[in-house]
Amino acid sequence: MADIADAAGLSVRGVQAAFNRHHGITPLAYLRHIRMLLARERLESDQDVSVAEVARWAGFVHLGRFAGAYRDEFGELPRQTRQAARGW
Image 1: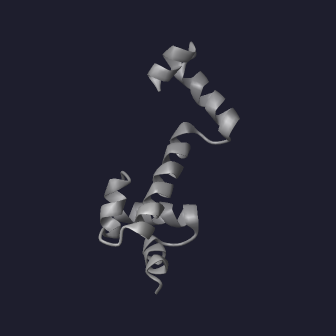
Image 2: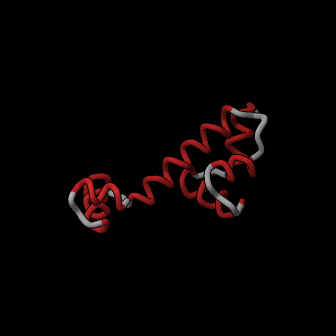
Image 3: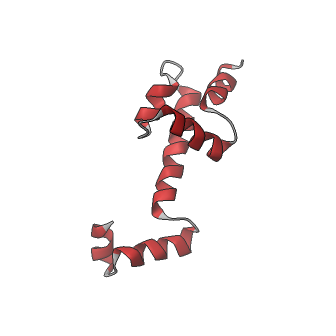
C-alpha cells in the first residue's frame, strides 16, 4: 500500500479513501472478496483438495473463520458448494 501511495503522491490513508470512494469498499475487503471468489472456484473445480486445504490456500489459518466468512459472502458453507459441484 505504501508503494502505491508513493507512486500516486498520496498518503496511505488517501489511497484507502480513494479506493473506498471508487469501489465502495476498503482495499482489504476487496482483497478478501477476491480470495473468496478464488476459493469458491477451487471448491467447485478441484475435487481432490479438501475444504481445509482450500481455506489455507486462500490465506485462512482457522477453518471456522473461513467457513463463516464464506457463508457471509455466498450464503452457503464451503462444503455445500463442494456438494453442489459434485451433483449431490
